[in-house]
Image (cartoon, rainbow, N blue to C red):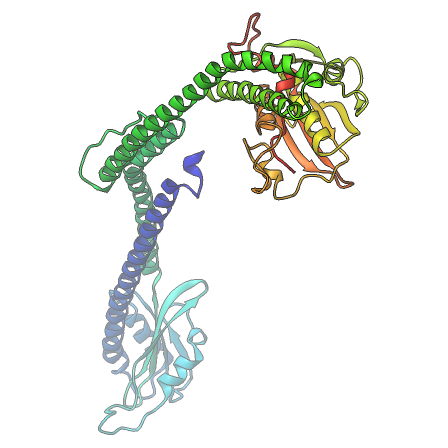
Length: 512
């Protein structure tokens, strides 16, 4: 069907070739037809007129000045027996006795001669140096009873009768019709031939273009080793060489970038892993200091609280960096289970002591096959972000529905009563380490929480969107398929990475 579309290059080439051939063939056929028509009619006309002029002089010119009707009929019959095969009407303009019009064929009478032609034939012109004779021979082509005829007339000089000739042009018409049909058939054959030639030319030209398009498609799919076979020295061959050079340069560049990216991911993962051991020891010490902070010197207690808070923040950052590294490396996996969504949301809220600050609108018994840990991370980030920036009460609603393709979908909306998210910040709330204001470069979180929540939604095949409600406040909407098993197989063990504790995943992505 692609080749039949008028927007395709192949069809445009065929149409252009066909139009050029049609115009050229039509013009050539038209010129040939008119030239042949003019030649055929002129030749027939000249032969008939010459014969009529000579026969009129031979037969009608020898008649008496007052010829009888029988004499006129005899002359008309004699004139009609020539090889030109025309019919004759003779009349005596001098008014013979009795007056009559002699015809060689009863089907033709003087009334069939056009009035204008009769007037021209009977008109007597003054004789001078430019006009040696008072009467002249005149002719006209007419259609009589549906048939073409050549009609001519002349008056015999010296007071003789006037004669008219009816020459049938039907044979010439039939010959010209046959010629027109032949030229029409030739034009149709030329059109078909041009279309076939255009198809062959288009195939020859478009085959390399199609190969180039297929290669570009494979290159876009990530098959960077795609190359074209080059043959010839024309422009298409040069284009193929250019493509191969560009593909080779792209492959090298992507390889370099991939190596750098892999090195960066490995560095972050190794750094995060190496930091966990000393952080564990530091965390243990800070917990002891936190327990004894009330008994410490009042001058030292604020510093101890600061160290405890920053240690926890650093621990959250390390855990989040390791989780992000797993997403970037593509090693994050789903551990699926059948989950009662309302129970899962309640458990998330209860574990963080948010029951008094969160309103839950969810029916019991809404089941979905999800990764419970990753869903908890998503909920903790969204609800925690709403409490931190929007204030309580935060409303969490759970609904089910259908996607555009008819699949079951789970929708969780988290809405707060705060000032909302600035419009210029909305497109960036899920960006890593994004800060709404450069003057506030530091926040209590790591700046990765919403980014991790979005990655966890994506790994389920879902999405998170952010918007401002018309009545005020920000609304984060989580949409997940109720059957994530079509995206990842069940795993009985660990998913290949260190579990992130739900509390460490609670972290705002951007400052409002």
